[in-house]
Image (tube, rainbow, N blue to C red; front, top):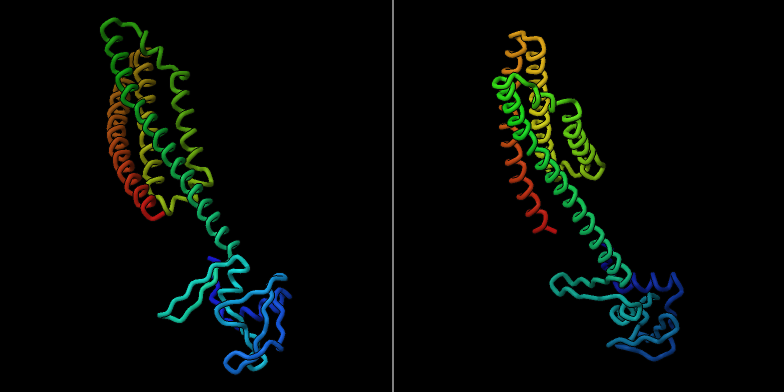
Length: 260
């Protein structure tokens, strides 16, 4: 914050050093001290009291000189402090505040986007689980792998793409730098990663059952059951983590909004 608490003599020295103010000592006296004329940027300035010469130091009316330069002056009687804020400084502070508000808004938008993408990704494990179950039942009843064939590599590639986008967003400089302030970013990512683990194990289950259909070996069916069960537990865990992340982000966002 560019605020300066200036004594009158200090202000005069600053003005004299820049050649802005000029004084003369041939204008009579005020309370026994020689009166000096005060000129700021070529214009005479007169306050409630005139400028005077005290012990070879020129003292001038602070408010009159400051306001002639476009500054704001305030007085605190409790601490006997005069505060001068230059107009340029006030504008800089205002501009800085606006810039900070805009940066915070963009950051919150990025976190919201990360959360929404994770929520979208989280919809897939349940859908995939049902697809695998239906494909397995269809094969057991009809002895046809029509639905199993749909769970090909191309089917899973879209999910990998979505998860990669989540990782890319979370790895941005903006969100990386904000992680100490917004712990919910890491919580959202924990939910996304757990959901990705579930998707990987559902894919493993589908692959194992396809191998069972192709080779007829019982161990593949056992591997299918193990992978499917593990994926379901991971899916439930991911949902719990996401609920916690939502709550945490809502709290942090509200707290940040009230303090900004």
